[in-house]
Amino acid sequence: MTKSAKILLAIIIFIGMSAALIHISFAGTVGNTATVEDPKGAGVFSLKKTRNFAIKTGADMEFVLDRDIKASAAADSEITSAQWYMGKISCVLFNRVEPYVKFGMAHMKVKWNEDGKNVKVESNNGFAWSLGGKVLVWDFERPNLRLVADGFYRVAELDMQKGSQDGAIVEMDRGGSAFFMREWQISLIAATDIDVSTMSSGSDFLGVTRIVPYAGVKYSDISGRLRTIWTSGNYNNPGQIRSDRKFGLVAGCDFVGPNSVSLNLEGRFIDETAITAGLQVLL
Image (cartoon, rainbow, N blue to C red; front, side):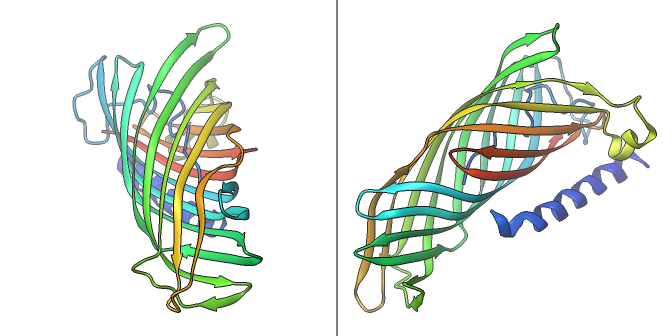
């Protein structure tokens, strides 16, 4: 299989995998890639890559099963589903620092209990952006282990499109109903590197020659305000929203090849239950 065919097949598989996950998904991707220097290679478009500088682009699709939140004027609050579809561009400096920016869209479902009523609302697909960076903290030769820190800040501004009270659909004033949310997260992970190029002929699939499993801890905090106005003139306002639990665990794996492309799968637990599928390309 040629290099171009492998890249195209990797993208098709990534899109298919993401589509299969789309219905189960709030959280930020830590890996994709776990380490600063991956993926390796000359670059898909053969752009100049020096020892001290490289450009990468990619995509993250994040899906959350649940995340408990606290609302100042409501009880039993929860983000029951959230999806983030983000394009990413980054630059790698000296193989140690990787600042990045992401742009894309987000979609969320939220529920809470207010004045004895169970309220559920759903947003449209709204604009989202993020700024962050990754730093190689330490590279151990023996054992083969790298410590990597990652941090970001992101924002989503969403219009609410539909909702219900105690299971009954209620018409919503879409012009006055909105959800503004911001999140910041810091994490520290440990990653190792497994060479699979000589294990079996199957390891040549898509050019994957290395697997990079990683795990670590993270601190994540969200805040925002949600306003829901019904066409009847009534409204529901759960007040200021914050994270219920802030510390969590992360574990994932990068599948890296020599052809400047890597795929990523990641899970996040305790403070949330979340899955990410990602693709990274060295330009």
